[in-house]
Length: 373
Figure 1 (cartoon, helix red, strand yellow):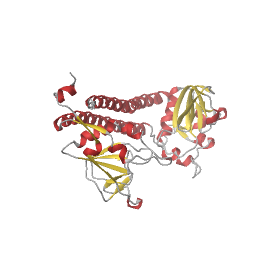
Figure 2: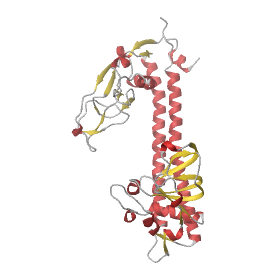
Figure 3: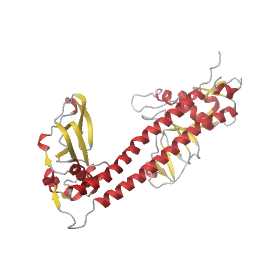
Figure 4: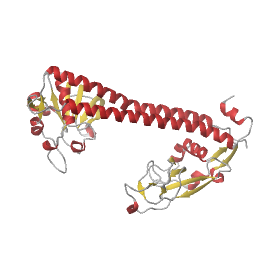
């Protein structure tokens, strides 16, 4: 006997249309001028996330919403705060005498993919109210609904807690890493000799070859651009260990991703990233850490399209401590970098695992036998 059968204890489950057990309301248009970054309440236009904040709300907390229009039409969300439901947002209001709010949410979330396939319209996709209201939903006794909600909410709460813990851990490690990187790479005037980057590395920019996307042959070789791998191709033009440095792009100023990054093995590099070769791992890694640590604004030209040209790159002064000191600094920073990368990579994996657990139990607990006609 399954857990669901034990919960039901022989009670037959009645099936109804959603239109018989919920009221479906549509949000009201909100002027864009009323949206701000510092409003009191989030405004949902039916999408996966809110579109801004406003000082007014039209619904209280703990409500189910479904996206009505756009690419996200059919997406199901549960809002735990007071909010403003905009014009492309359906709000689901279950009849509490028949169906528990969260039970309706878990059922709709189970059928979210089915709802997204019901989009209509040649221009902007939309979801008709009938596609929602005509859906059949099982209605077990309220006590059974409560137990199912308790189990499924436990999984979502555990996922949220784990995500918060790992995110806090990642934030702490990044702060630690930044602190030690800044401390280890800050030298007093005259403490160590400084050398121009052009004296420390061999520049191989003349070997770069850009290939337009339409002419690239798909393969296993990473194809690098200004901010990292942008594609995989069949051939390579470099083989070995290199330091690639962004040559142009907004990221030179924004620094949302590293502008210096190591690349090893067989690679292809286009003309948006400088290619530098060093004699040792320690020298390459030291320069990588240092360039990602300092402000490069004095070396960047162009307002509309920021650019770090080869001449300015080669002129950057790099502290040049002894080989043993470089090795010591790299050893410390590599450990922090590995730890931060481990958490960064592990976070989405853990979230995906918890989501799969939730989906497994949701499918099991909401798979009620259909009534015989």
